[in-house]
Image (tube, rainbow, N blue to C red; front, side, top):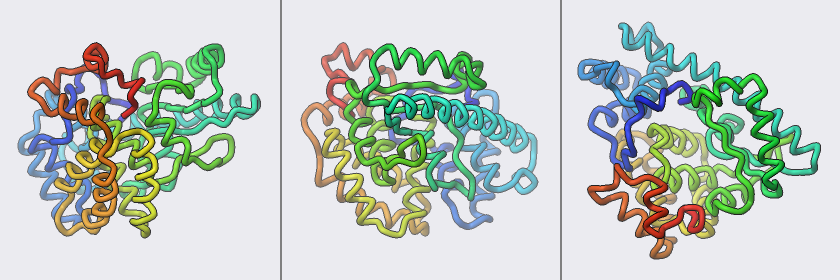
Length: 326
């Protein structure tokens, strides 16, 4: 969530949430209101609000927005709702900035594609009837050179979202064609919607799963909520699996995608239909296991040193994420 301070965000969690994070995840995905409320109260009993990591704060704020602050009750609920409201305010600024950047690209004949949070915000994906907040503006601009990327960055910094970007409350990433195979494969599925293009739902799942398993910090575990929301809203599981399979094949991301989806399935409440709807996606990922490089990155993350490994350290190990993709 955009309002999380980097100083209280824990290192990479991998695909295995802590027991208290599992409580929050299960409650967010729980369709039964009473069971979700019971899980929330159990989490509150163990919560030290000032010491919780960024992943837990984000999940708690989403859960309170789902339950309602009057139902959740207490000071923790009020503070979590404050996080959510601030994230929503920052999201409006981020969306306005993204629209300005897309308009500039359109005038130059460049088709920009929304990736990550921005794509989720602009699509039909909803959690508890609401959009998920934008934490980072990510635009894939395939024909952009350094000058254009610099101009787009400067435009974003000079706009209404500038303070949030400088304060690291809103991320900003302008991605050219060269350097990120996973993003390029995701963007290849996109269809134009006004000045911006949006990836297909299956491509978004591939990007969320492979990216959050392999390289970046865990995006506060919200990627699980995003995939859950996409799958829950779609009727055609096989179509999603086909779209996802194309992306992970191009990006050599089958191994990591399968493990991310298995981790998600493990935390979805047993009665949720979305858990069964993940099976075609898991099968599609298993059928495209990828090469040695992708597996090696995943095994490094599974090692005892996994939480300490950064993108830079993995690059120094000869496993360059920009060269190898996800």
